[in-house]
Each structure stands twice: as structure tokens, then as C-alpha cells.
Image 1: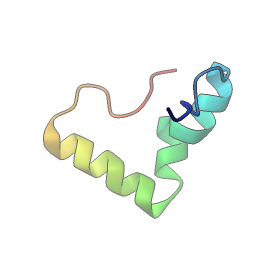
Image 2 (image 1 turned 60 degrees about the horizontal axis):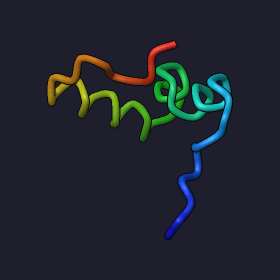
Image 3 (image 1 turned 60 degrees about the vertical axis):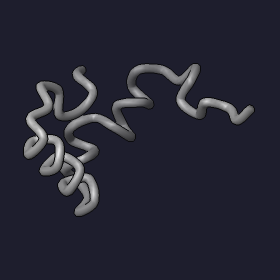
Image 4 (image 1 turned 90 degrees about the horizontal axis):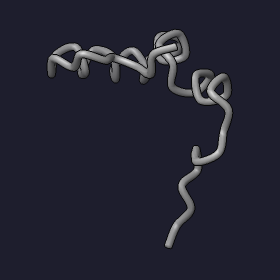
Length: 48
């Protein structure tokens, strides 16, 4: 079975990868946020 890569990381390190500001920093991240908005997700990224 494969390991879950973000299993025992601290909250701050997870936010660096998948927080809102991290998503908005790259073109692909902005695309993710746009798609989640389009789908109607209540949470766009991991809350702080």
C-alpha cells in the first residue's frame, strides 16, 4: 500500500502547499480555486 504523503505534517507545512495564498500564487493553483468556485464548494482551500 502507498504511503499517505501529508499524514504527519504540521498545519503550517500543509498550508504552505494547499492553503489559499499558496494556491493563488501559481497559475495552476488559481485554476483549482476557479474550478472549486464553479462547482460551488463551500471551502475553497484548507482553512487556517
